[in-house]
Image (cartoon, rainbow, N blue to C red; front, side):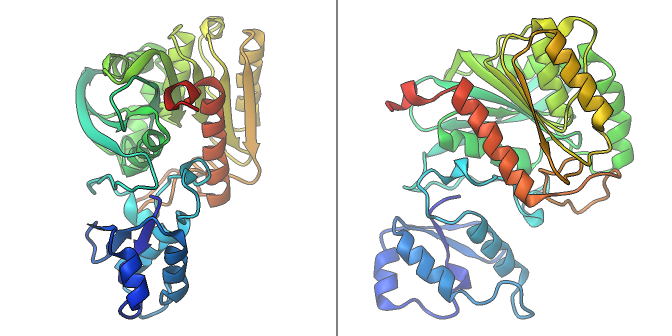
Length: 352
């Protein structure tokens, strides 16, 4: 979140000049004992950062370290820095039971968010909709989560896309549940991944919600997904959905023979070179399918990365072969944004 100061971390009272510079700003409290101060003066932000007490020493409480990580990861030195910085959260920030709050700053596009309920796969799904400022129609992104389900990681990504100017819907997989138990997650996801019609049903239900949102331009929608959510995005394409782009991370899944020919848009896929769940043989089968179908496709292989390399560490067990790679997480996010910039440009909406 751009343009913020971790005021709690300042080791002493601000100097008079600093206080005066911050006075016009807005204080936003996010709990856990720290305060964020919004300001439009990046040089003051940098002064505060330079004067912050160490963030990882023995005297720093968890709230200080948490707030400090957020500031360091999202420095206020670019007015539209969400294109450069992965919106993934530190481990303490993405727990599924934590409510998300949208911060508004003069340095970023203001947005609104809400949950949306809709039926799919015999469940009541609870998606997360992020809307950019304004009342005009905008291009939209359908955002699919990893197999564990919708969490604050995907909500933050939806927020980041809305800050860029897109309507974004992060869709649900498990009826409002987050499956932190690997065995429970696999028991639900493996049969789902083996059933293209079920995946398409989940995807189309969410796509219908996004398409009927008044702010959405229904002819300008992309689908981006991670893991199981990426497999669902691909199945929407194989079902002939009207999409402008499909992006997947660690989801080089193949479909039923011949159905890739129905894909009507460019496809981008990212995968870790050391991903044991999407190994080279699976990647090769995926690219062969795309090539035989005449799809405009591209594949990015991130050296040394495991499965779910984009996802910050979690505080529960995970399946073997999963590992966070912060550098590649940022690179993959930039690649996703580049895909959207190419296939779903905002220029005509933003007057650029």
